[in-house]
Image 1 (spheres, rainbow, N blue to C red):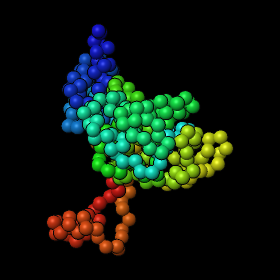
Image 2: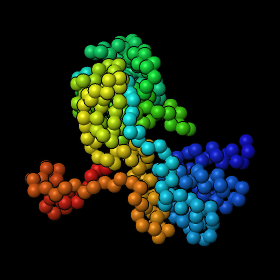
Image 3: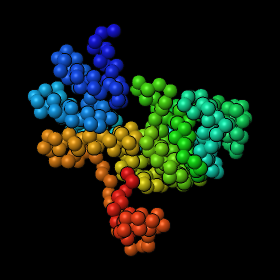
Image 4: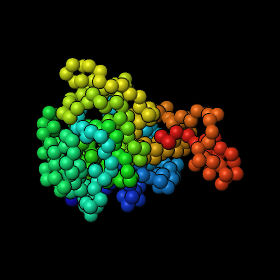
Length: 327
């Protein structure tokens, strides 16, 4: 393997043990351009940011390129924007889907192996679901048949993701309905979930995986339907007739950036990295991102949690006074 190829492979890691080596390569004239490309799209820099900044201030042109790339949010802008129109095939589970349906406790032994564990998703017979081996293997053939329509599947349910918080539940859904992650085997991200109600923690884990969870009336959506989702317009239409089946409002416009960034956490970390780089270069804050907004003031009473934290801090209504949107 050539030094160039080794450097390229090193750059496919998302952060961690490769960072120190990539920063060192900024001093290697032959490999520095490869390191620049890798570091420019690496978000998990943490304190190593200051090592790059120090090199840039010392006159290293390659380090300056990395800093400038972060400042211009190239890591974000190089990713495709959320589409205006998304065509999907409905995989609908009526009633309530809890996380044990998606990641059964008796199959906990296989959770680290996502493709294997996903086989147990919806393994028990229920209305509209046809497990390959009831009690053992979920509706894999049914899922594959729907994929033959040529569109990505969307998980649709009346109530989705209740119960205990299990990232493995998200992993199972996205294994069948998400997108491959470059250089990361046996795991997928992205995808779409439509629910009349989506449990908050499941909603969050979907966000973290770069999926687009939408709370919307799903009564007119049926198994196998082909639909068009318009995230900016806030409507779901029949793909063939164009009939509007439901309308919705995203919980926050920041969701659009989260999907583009590959998840809520990558967006938060990447946005912070861009802010630090711009500050280092003496630039104004970036206007590329949709920013969280402060919660509107309220004269309503405090929740029990707010009262508890307020009392502990000695400030009445402490939580409501300071908290901002969770996204």
